[in-house]
Amino acid sequence: MEALILRPDSSPLSRNIEDYPEGIIIPIDKPYRWTSADVIRKIKFAAIRHFGKKNLKVGHAGTLDPLATGVLLVCIGKATKLAETLQSHDKEYVAGITFGATTPSYDLEKEIDRFFPHEHITADAVRDALPAFVGEQDQIAPLFSAKSVDGVRAYELARKLHREGKSMDEAAQELIRVSRINISELELLDFGFASSDSLSEDIEATKASGRINVTDNSALGLPRAVVRMACSKGTYVRAFARDLGEALGSGAHLDSLQRSRSGIFRVEDALSVNHVISNALQH
Image 1 (tube, rainbow, N blue to C red):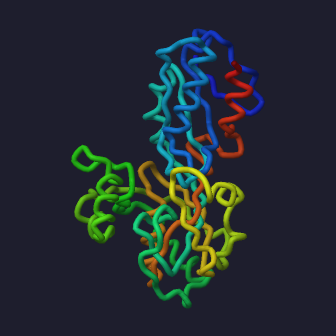
Image 2 (image 1 turned 180 degrees about the vertical axis):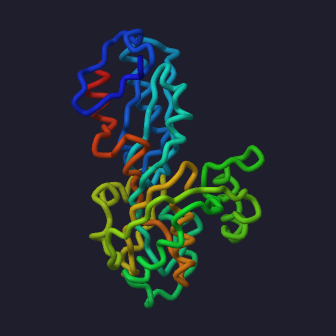
Image 3 (image 1 turned 30 degrees about the vertical axis):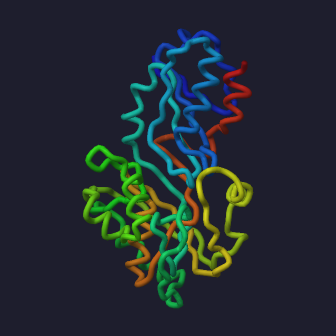
């Protein structure tokens, strides 16, 4: 038997976890500004209450940054043993990339630290630069990441160094080991100039709330591209944005990110946290 995959049209789950001997996989569309741990905490609480089993195992396959949305695979029961395998599958992302400025975190968690020339960046320039990033390559992960450096999460070191005013790029090169990644597809979906209209409804709705900081650079009117990327496990899209900006003789940072696919699971078939709690894990 295989693990049960929960789908939008699935019936409510039985209250007996033994009815799912291989466990349950739930593709969640992770909310903006939630950590992956936030999702697990919410689903685990509901699952323990639903199944009446206090020591129920619940985990996820592949962390998503707080400022990203999209497919996060939540595993319940014996399906947690599949997490490593699920995490190893290729991913697809849709990334909003703003050019002409960088931030220490390579996304909107930190404010702009440097501005760069950007008048020369056009849709054709971005489109022409993408093929050089397709294939196997070395990548230095952002220092603001969950990578472990001598047993310490990189983002903990990053926040300390940022407070001390040190360069994140130089620190990353010194502290983070180079990873071998593979980008199999890159496609320019859209190009224009950043404005408040470029921000998703989720971002607009949560800018003023939550413990995760979000800066708003949309009023600067900087050039902005939307890129679809298919890639291997361990690829950091924030690092790709950094490298693409450098390749174009400028700087860049992510202004939005959605994981549109993880293995066979697509965001169109993912469930909201509220749907899972209200329909599948009824109290």
